[in-house]
Image (tube, helix red, strand yellow):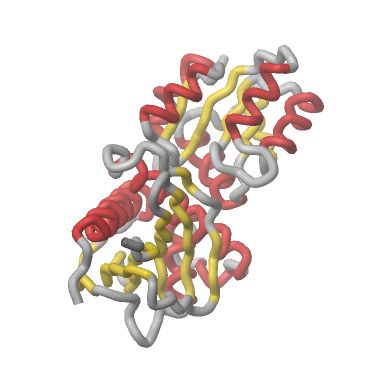
Amino acid sequence: MKILIVDDSKAMRMIVMRTLRQAGFGDHEFIEAGNGSEGLQKVKSENPGLVLSDWNMPVMSGIEFLRALRAEGNQTKFGFVTSEGTQETRDLALGEGALFLVTKPFTPESFQEAIGAHVS
Amino acid sequence: MEIDPSLKAWLDALTAATDELATTTLGFEGCQIDELLPQVPYPPPTAGAYLAMVGNDQTLQLAIVSDMQGCRLLSGALLGMVGDEDGLAESDIADAMGEIINIVAGGVKTRMAGSDKGFKLGLPMFIDGHVEPVKETEQAAHRVTLGSIRAYLLTLRQKRMV
């Protein structure tokens, strides 16, 4: 499965990929985008099985990215990996169609718990 | 000079969130508080990451500042490059330090959710050089030690007009 990692920080994309490998998801193919707008294009061109997106990003935020996807009828599995961990944010994310929200700082275990059920 | 208790609460949340990141991600034993300061220290730290938190009735700047070598070491700790930090470009350090303050600010927002639910996180920025707060700025800082790195955690807020 292709997993699309969307974050404006190159450092964080690298850390997410490293943690995914540590969590046992290293057999999957990782692709990257630097904001929601780039993510939208990558979803269309690469057809990933799962999107992991940051929340606060320039150009297009994570929640705008998710809304844009769903508005186009795209139901790609989508989860947030973000420093935004309030209940309000979590409720908004799930209400808009995200499957989970992993809060930074995260561990391999938190990835296994959140992602495991959604990755074939 | 006294520190407003409400600003001290933000500083304590910043320190707690930094301690969590230090322990879970950076590989340090924690964030040791060495000193509480009522203002940004002088001579000022020369490099660091800043992020604005914008609320309904106040805006704060949160910062983790050190010198360039301290930022290099913190970035190496985040990126799992301890011992290889010299290979980091300044752009890598800016990116990593921005992510550090972003993660920490998220922890601050969660910890302070009871005081104002409307807070929004800005985008982080890295400054190689010191910031001089204007006199209308309330300040509070912790001088801290993270592993072998000496740094400052800063909270800055515009004084409320009566």
